[in-house]
Image 1 (cartoon, rainbow, N blue to C red):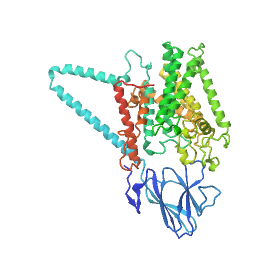
Image 2: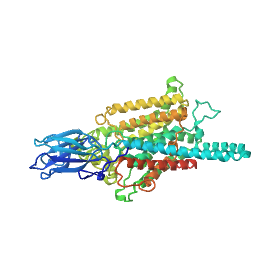
Image 3: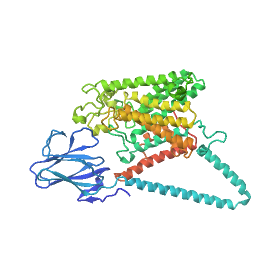
Image 4: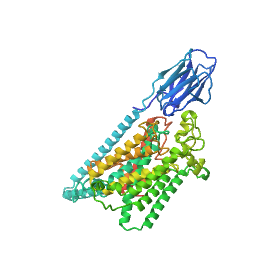
Length: 593
């Protein structure tokens, strides 16, 4: 049930392989008079040429080397060096397409006398998904042990009470009282409806929102800890939607949900708008500055300090959306028409929809019709060797160009995944220009908050959550052509594309619908353990970022070159921060900006 392999195979040190690596052994069936050259193409590199991987010396019958096995590969053998890249018009001896290698496997690529080639599996790879079963069994064992200890303590207390018959009734009453107090403090009583309130009336504070925020922060900590080094958990290289790509937009969505709730409370208390604007500005500034400080963790060198980041984009989007809502919101709607009553949550935001819509139109107009210097109009690919190396200096198109002009190349994120897959330029996925569609992301959350404030019935809210989820999901599918790379506007977290905003908002509505139904309506789930983390999200985000390389949150044992060890380490970090959140929750300590 674990990733295990013998130490040596054919003299190859298998323990020297990294996670998702294999050995490829290229051999000749007959002595070759000239060197051969192996080129490879990963399925993750869209519309790319083959890239040179290894030179196969003529005087060496076998050449073994390590190769990435996480994604499907295509191989091409040349009898001459055609340069760094091999294009479709280059002649080659042989080609193997869509080859699936595996972790810790050993593969023989044989070149025949006639120039043909064949791939054989010399040693079977390990199953990289068995660690999930192993971890599940470990979790079951831990839960069982905890239950057994709890049962033993309960029996011990019962036996101790039986020896004190004179005080048994008073002790039992005291235990019941203490037990109720503990449940009240821990939040267990939140799952029971107050006797004076009808079950169909929602509570004032929605635990589903805190739970959804907790799910987002726990998932963020897990993926930031490596996510077990599974490719589908990590961020997509360029286009596409992986697990890690869901976290940030969900946070923004939840922030948007809370904006109208918070502002209505302040306006109800007759807080002056000037004071509210000051509070919004202060909070946005704090978010930006904290994010800037976190960017300096590897050294406060101002010459190459990354300016933008996650919290910086939070600050910008929160500032714009909050001010727009504060000055454009209409609380009272005069008409009592049936359609107006059914759509009052949208009609109240009409002017805000117009403003946000104009920002989105401006963003799309620039993205589609303004070319970056040396780049074609409407290009928003990863640059480098994308499109057969046609636009190597056009990473991100006009988005990347604007960010480079505003901030300078040295102040952008230097290590995006696309830079290593596509050989592109540095690109900041949280750069300033893409803040425009991020404002829409927050505003879609604000629309959800308006729905919560406008309708008090559970069914009314859930129907609208479901409708928004379906509509946004379909719109995203149409924009991306229900494909990864071939639609009008592919789903792309790096560019924060419109289809990405709509797709992630659709999933946020869907997840909120699930949490709302199970927690606030049916109350079959109390939101634990995510509820604790959701009530101290900013503290956990900053804390896990600062402690990223510190014990006891992170550790290394041996080579750490298997998915099992990397997943255990990521889960350990995630659970530990959740326990910290539980401790703060029990002490009623909540930190917010």
